[in-house]
Image 1: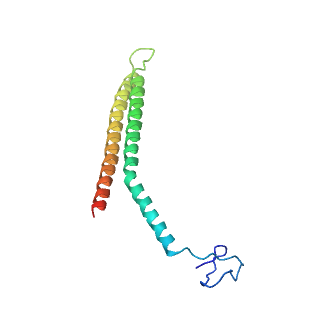
Image 2 (image 1 turned 30 degrees about the horizontal axis):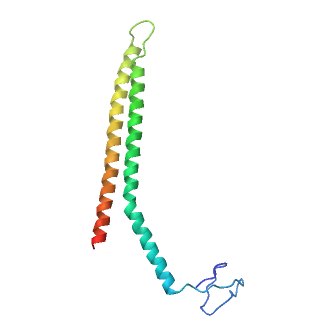
Image 3 (image 1 turned 45 degrees about the vertical axis):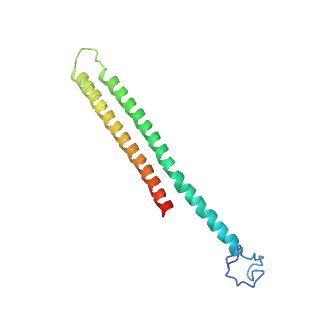
Length: 138
């Protein structure tokens, strides 16, 4: 047992800390300690059973974030490809047109990455659920 105030190691018979004079509180009974352990086990089970929902929520959020980003990239790519020069078709205009196509391709890649990450999170959530069922059965 240790003093709560100064950290000095104490024996069970001591009522006041010899170093700082702090009153020593006796440790809780074994029944209260076992109740606390049971409560902690229940809390851990509750967290484990609900963590899969965190995976699902993250999957949905990431999916929509990537879709919105891809939409913005695509839109700005179209805007860039529509830029026209004053004097007619120039090399610069052709560059902007091709750049718009590159942005459209990049938007497709972003959508694919978003779908992949979302699918992985859903898979993790589903497997976490299965692990909890396996633990309950044993």
